[in-house]
Image (cartoon, rainbow, N blue to C red):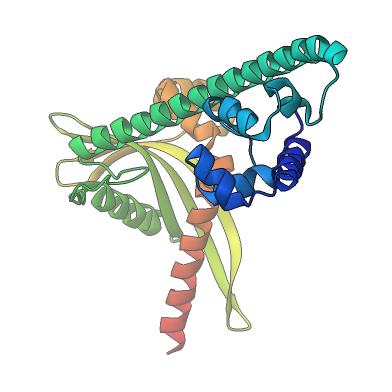
Length: 272
């Protein structure tokens, strides 16, 4: 069905009867804007209005849908065609409604999942991922990880005489202290033309034992000659996966930037 042709046909018949849009709208109990919309091809009359409209315009519904006057021999054939077109359009609407329903269900499920994830994280005093969803919430700060990080960085800076930054994969607590699984980046810099220039860089995963007072009691890392064996011995599987993903995660670059900032600050102080 061609909405534009049907609209033009309605307009033609209305004018042939010397009726204004207002007069036609009054006969059908609709607004004149509705008549204007039909005649501009912006919509079709509702099914409940087709018969009253056809009675006023003195045509059949068949002729309205074909947008022309039909001869007797054409009417039966066009009726069948219009029925098939109507069924096809109805089928298309049903498919659209199914897709729309599926899309809305997907949105609802996705939002529900996001809500449940954030509520779970709030209940566990963790940062939300998507939203606070109107709740008044701010996770409390636990300084333990930062204190462990500072203790390890100080230990390696004293031992290696190099700027050190640490990424903590996991921190386990037991009866005698802590076990930290970390990545340690130690770098030495030289001052050249008033700039900190990287001289040497060493990066490696470590398993570090700390006392309750965060004193480092033992540090172990995989050795070059037995790297894979040491990796299996020192680290659980989930930590090994994190170590393998470390470079691609961007954390290594973060450690380099932290060391460079430390070096620049150090050289700035000694120049002052």
